[in-house]
Image (cartoon, rainbow, N blue to C red; front, side):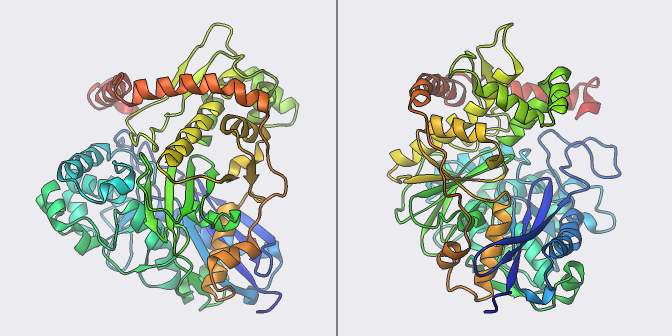
Length: 561
């Protein structure tokens, strides 16, 4: 291997995509570039249309994904100052479950003439939660039939996943369902665009596609859901699965033209953004949990133990690293919650102060919040503004904040929201531990590693030292590490991770005084968690239902959908 060899990792996120150029021998980042999706998240109406979309819809535009290839990759190469001929491999990762209907050649239905006005012809972003009724139906039927795969998903599959979303398409728009020839994760679709033929990866199939022990849900099960759904797997989903780190193919001439890379460069099998980051974080060994904290948080961990963890998002053999059981849990809203509060509830004076001090409003609130003692605000929140992914697996839940008075300050609410997300992570870790899957250490990656206040709150709430990934581009670097394996530069992901991973030497250590002070708050969080999430009260679900009814039937609010 040439000492000048580099790989390109491409991370497709919720609002943007990023490409990074990484040196193969030691993982040094040489250059990066970001491309913001022009269409962002489509929630209100389709591009060029005025008809409102139904509540809980979250779609995206496939041309935005291709824009990352056309813009971010060439820009990253320029920033790195490398010759494209030095690139020996390309790897990608994607949000999941982001899924789209295509023709047999991979063309998204929404790009076909006459189909651009159909919402179900568009890619459904991971946080599309409008398929909750279908998820409920799948869960109820699987529980009645005692399907063997259901415990592998903590007892409930999510509205975010492939089968629920596909069933929604069938029920809401049978014509779009019938026109769909391939139902595919965006993680696999982008690789299709790069190397010219369809591939499927074990991670998205195992975690988001209900593929366990070499099999999908049976035709009999699908027929019991809906006779029209009987052949869904066979007709639209089934394809040989490839292991992570394998070579999917070589870059096509068209993709080479988009990216500025040489034709034929090896392309790695697609992967999930959180899972690919384990290589960056050097958490491929058993018991090393990684929390990728951004708009949401995904918790992934390898284990040699096969167990059923209540409320986990899923597990798959080889789903994080080949040869081990990979576990996943998650929180649907984390950075999104903080951003929502800053955008909607922080008074102008705070924005003005942040501008004068040359800092973001997030940093200002963090500075102010850090000055207070634990519990001084008298608040506890539930971090369910985007529903609960783990351990309740219920996207009909919503956020809660208790303890407010007329003296409550914005920074106190901000702190309570940060603490709530930390309590959510603690709940997940305790669920794994109690199920016999021990968590030996915790590493933090993702965009929130930039906020020292958030990291310290997590260390104190969890009473654990936190290892921190030493890059803001942890997903893209992880994709690059997988590219190095696909190109043959390393024998496996473990050795590539050891050589190319990026973790800070110093840990974020808990303060014993704050650790003790957080225990009573976590107890209250647990009481509220069980009251609103486990049957003490169904008020949050009823409120969600009332909101949906109002938005779809009241002429006064019809235009706000």
